Image 1 (cartoon, one colour):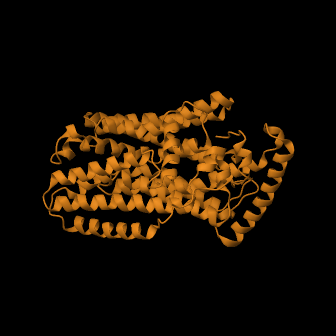
Image 2 (cartoon, rainbow, N blue to C red; image 1 turned 30 degrees about the vertical axis):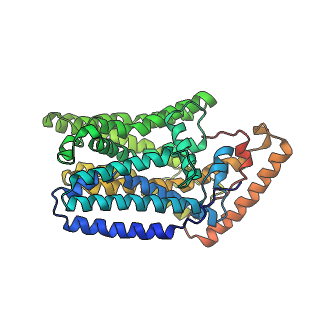
Image 3 (tube, one colour; image 1 turned 90 degrees about the vertical axis):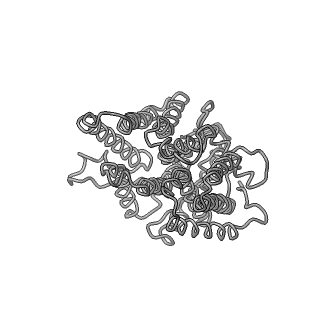
Length: 442
């Protein structure tokens, strides 16, 4: 299996210089821009892009790591997806280009504001959103065509779940749940850039946080994963997927109560009744999600050990073979718990109303997902390695060779993970052929 190479003649360096120059201008323009509400306006239009770009860069970092370590992470994906999967070089170049162009757009937006040209500033934002839309749907081969098509086709399958859920579909949808805040912000930005919305003046008042579309954007990724889980249960009869669907459904009351709190609800009713209910709903969602991260996604026996060990706090039991030092898994469990509770900043009025703090926590959630990703891939590769030819409708001798080769790769990768990367990430897998012959393990 060969992954998409970087486009010929395209290197990240020119894009990096453009991005750095635009970033410096953005910082200086925000510091000295005489326009009132300049920070709020640039956040309104460009904040939705930031967590998405952070997620893209996290994926670039993960792929580059797996490639350098010789880890066949693409074995997790279906045969067709694995063949189309962009390589690290193409992803790095694409991420540099997209980030730099959006940074340039934000710089021009602030430049226009500084010179009192609100009309041209608004059109900069409109062009940015039109450009991102064209980037996803343009059928041509120009500007990273193979990478764009792979992402666009996977996104289309996620949004329209009419076929069996592949591993690429599940992974993208799970990552999008970590971008729920961005989708809510995107609703406000869409309100502001719409031609019928009017000019830049009054955009903040027309498109507030209490906009009805905001909670829809927040809950949409969880609805998608809910439907995916039910589809997998329908296809496989795996009851774990029902409980996984229930996990995603615990976000629905959180979003509904948050929407009520941001609307024109009576303050006494919010403080006395709705806010405590919102906190309880959010705690339930965080607890359920944390349990699922540890026990199901990472296959670390922790909660299931309660009552079976003599110590007050049970010791986590790791799956074997594990790829990383035990200290790394303990760090992952502790940090994931803290980051799962990041929503508690909203209990502080001063932090909740800050222009930058919500964006910071949105990026922190992306970093939590980045950590989650490595062990989730490790678990999937372990599942593939454990398969036997009798489990698949493939020729016995061919599959047996693949499993044997995968076992050797896992042993070699485990040695590399412990000798080269202290408490860092690594994994191994059987070849993608096992996956490409019809296996679904979402």
